[in-house]
Structures are given as C-alpha cells and as structure tokens.
Image (tube, rainbow, N blue to C red; front, side, top):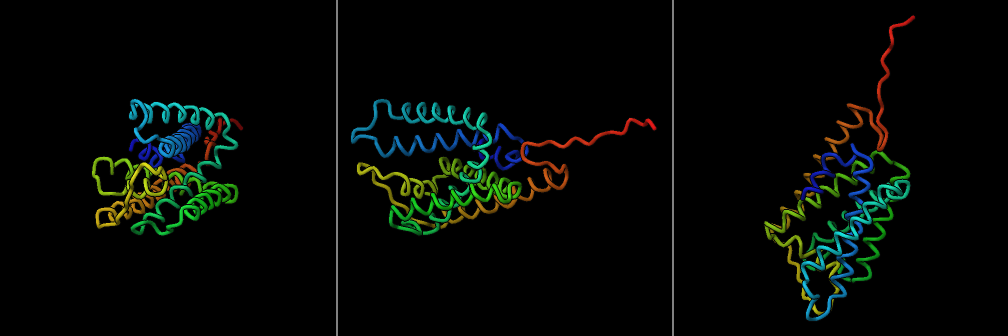
Length: 218
C-alpha cells in the first residue's frame, strides 16, 4: 500500500527512487509467480518465509538494476503500467474477460509492450499515467488484504496455474467498487502529478529545471 501511495503522489517527481521501486515490484511479482506455480503439493518448508524473503530479495536486486540501468528501466515503468492495466481489464468479469490462459498471457504481455513503446513516443504523459495506475492498483490491491472483497482472486486466477491450488473469482459489488476506485485514484493522481510537475514546475522525468536569477549587473 505504501508503494502504491508513493507512485500516486511522487512517481513522476523522483527519478531513481521510482525506477528502483519499478524494478523491485517487477522482480518481486515475477518471483512470486514462479514460486506459486512451482510450489509442491505439501508446500515449501516455512512457506511464508520463502515467499516473503525470496520475493523481497530478488525485488531488491531488481531495484538496484532499475536505478543503475535507467536508460532501460524507464521503459519498464510504462511496461509495468500496461501490465497492471491488462490485469485490471481482465478482472471485470467472473472467470475473467479472457478465459483462455495463453490468450490471457498474450494480452498482458501485449499491453505491457505497448505501454513500454509509448514511453518513447509520449514520455512525460505516459510516465505520469503509468505511475498513477501502478500506484492506484497497488494501493487497492494491498487494501484488499484487509478488506477481503475478492479482488485478489482475479490475480490468483490469472497467475496461479499450479494444479495443486484451486482459485475461483466471482465479481460482486464489493469487487466492482474496488475496481472502480482504481480508476478514481488513477485520475486523481494523473491530475495531481500533471499539475504539480508539468504545469507548476515544468519538470521532466529525471530533469529538474532551476530558474536562473539575474545577478543585477549590467
């Protein structure tokens, strides 16, 4: 949830921290997906510790790579934004909008690649939109660990293909509310980040413009 708030409020304002958190989230998510789909029937020894430590550990490696390979990781921001947009779209129907697993993966990867490509064409606008959506989704995703509306089940149905796990997803009113608030928070974040960074301070991502003061000498 805190990472989501950061992306919504400061995602465009700060350069390296945003790239680091993007790398962290991407690596941690991919690690979780790998661990979940390869979990044996009786589970891992100390399952919670394995999931937390391995995902966080590889996430930290991803954060370091995101900071230092910024010329590449800047496109990952758009890609991660597209990734979460695709997951959000799929969740708008019980048993998901697209039911075929291969088609789901192709859809998610395709939207992610479009998001990454758009960074090259419309850098400022796409980065604001991507950080806003990443933040909005992560915030509501984290909130659902406490609210238990069922929003998490869509994520499990998409990415948990372990034959030993049973996942079901039924879209009910609480889930619709959570999915709707993703868009509300997204729009609020876009307006805030665009006004504060672009209109007010004319800031580009990773570039802080400092107005020069005249020395008064003629």
